[in-house]
Image (cartoon, chains in turn yellow, green):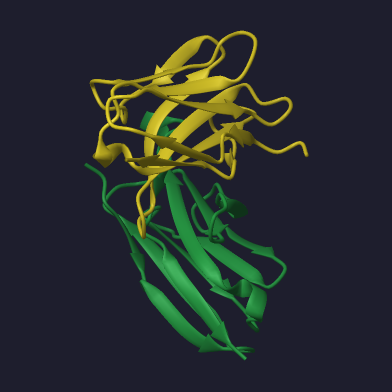
Amino acid sequence: NAGVMQNPRHLVRRRGQEARLRCSPMKGHSHVYWYRQLPEEGLKFMVYLQKENIIDESGMPKERFSAEFPKEGPSILRIQQVVRGDSAAYFCASSFAGNQPQHFGDGTRLSIL
Amino acid sequence: GQQLNQSPQSMFIQEGEDVSMNCTSSSIFNTWLWYKQDPGEGPVLLIALYKAGELTSNGRLTAQFGITRKDSFLNISASIPSDVGIYFCAGQSTDSWGKLQFGAGTQVVVTP
C-alpha cells in the first residue's frame, strides 16, 4: 500500500498522559499536514510541515501540542498532558508540493479516559 | 477569518437520482477540492479544481470552480448505493499554501 500510513489507528490515554501519533507520507511526498476532526464536523487544519521544517502552525494550540517531520522517519504529532477535550480523530495528509492535492491517511482515533 | 459554508447538510435520495451540493466562501480560493469520507476512514480525493470556471468530471461526478472563485458545486449523477458517505469541499488560498479549509460536509444516504 503506497498510501499515507498512520498509526496507531486507535489510541486510548488517561488524562495527563502523552499521546504520540505517527504519519508516513506517500512515497515521493515531502509535504505533510495534520488535521483534527470532531464528530459530525469537517476537518480543521493544525500544522503543515516539510522535511525538518514547520511551514505553518497557525492551527496548533499554543500549549501541549507539537509536531515534527525529521529527515528520517515518520512525522509525529505529540500531545502532552492530554485532556478530555483532546479526544478526536487526527488525520495526516501528504502532497508532492504545497500547491498539489493532499491525500489523507485513515486517521488515529484518540480517546481520553 | 474565512468562512466556508457547505449545503445541504444531508440528503436522502433514491437510487438512480442525481445529487447536487455546493460550497460558498467568504473570500477567494485558488483551489477547490472535493473529498468523500466513509465511516472510520480518511477523506478520499474525488476532484481537484484549479481555475475559475473550470468544469471537471470523474465518472459520474462533475464539479465546477465558480467564476467568482468563492464557490464550487459537486454533482453526482445516477446515484448508486456505494455513493453513501459524507462529501466535503475544501478550499485553499494563495496566502496560506498547504492549509485546506473544509466545509462541514454533506451526508448522502441512498435508498434502493
